[in-house]
Image 1 (cartoon, rainbow, N blue to C red):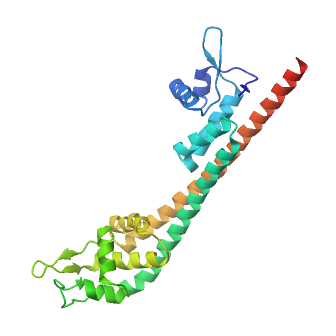
Image 2 (cartoon, rainbow, N blue to C red; image 1 turned 90 degrees about the vertical axis):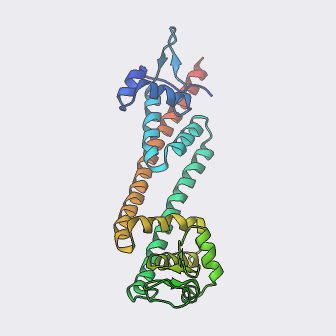
Length: 261
C-alpha cells in the first residue's frame, strides 16, 4: 500500500508528547500496524505526519470502548485497507455490549423474581430428610420446590453454581440459605435460556457481594460500566471516522500528484 503521509513532519517525540506516551510506545504501535509505516530521513530517523497523529487518536479513543486487542485489530485492518474486516470487528464489539446489557437485564429480572421467595422464608425451614439443622434444606425438597430433578441440582453443583455441604451423620447433601438463593437464581437464569457457563460468573457476583442487597450496588456499577462503554464507543467511532476521512483525502491527493507526473 502507498504511504499516504503529507503535510508537516513530526518527530516520534512530538507524536509521543502530544498523546502522553513514550517514544517507544509510538514505535511499538507502528510495529503493530496501529500506525501507518513512517517515512525515514536520509539518516534513518522516523518522521510522522498528521495522518499518524489521527491514527493514534483513533486507536486511543477505540481502546476504552472496545479493548486493546480489538482496537489494535481494527486499526491494523484499516491500515491494510481491509475496511470490511474493521467494521466486522466493531460490529462484534457492539454485539457483545448488547449481550452484556441483556445479561444484566436477565440478572435483575431473576433477582426481582427471587426476592419475594426469599423474603417469605421459603427454603429456610428445617427439613427432616437429610437436613443437618435449622435453615438447611435437602436436595429432594429443594428440587421439588424448584420443579426440577435432584439430578439437575447435582449437575449445577458440578458446575460450581451451588455448593451444598454434606451432613456428617448421613452423608446427604444439605443446602443452607445461600445455597437456596444460588439455586433459585440459577433456575431463573436457566429458564431465561442462559447456559451454565454464562451463569457461573453471575453467581460469583452474588456470592462476592454477600447476598442480594449488597448486589444492588454492584448492579448500579455494572450499569455505569456498560453506559461508559457505550459512550466510549461513540467517541471511538468519531475519531475513527475522522481518520478514515484523512486517509481518503491523502489517497485522493496522491492520485492527483501521480496524474500530473
